[in-house]
Length: 168
Image (tube, rainbow, N blue to C red; front, side):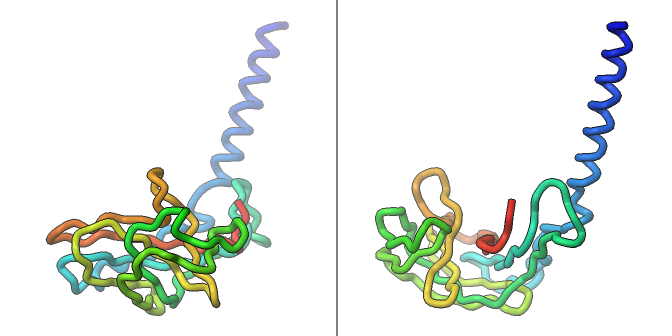
């Protein structure tokens, strides 16, 4: 009797695992950014893609409500590496009313979400302008908001995901 219960439990576990692995495949909703690497024309600085996430990205995918990821045109504000005490937050969703760190440059992404900018070696924070606010939804573990290092004689890839209309 005990061996039958174990066999049924294993079968149920395997079927459940199979269901979840099929429902979570990336073939259904691709989160890969466009291949913008071929557009790079700088030798030193940062380049990347701005992507807008909207909709349902829950583990069990429903084609009716599934999310979309779209490359978008946005202004990107590049500041010296910025910590939480250098910004004025607007609520809790990664939005900021103002940024007190030094503004280094502003660049705009194209229709494929691609942007690039020549920068000196250093650590920078990248904010996307959304209407009148700045958006940056991740930190680097050292307290810096959306930060990346730029090294001498190389380019750094920066992926900026705008996720405030996505559900996870």
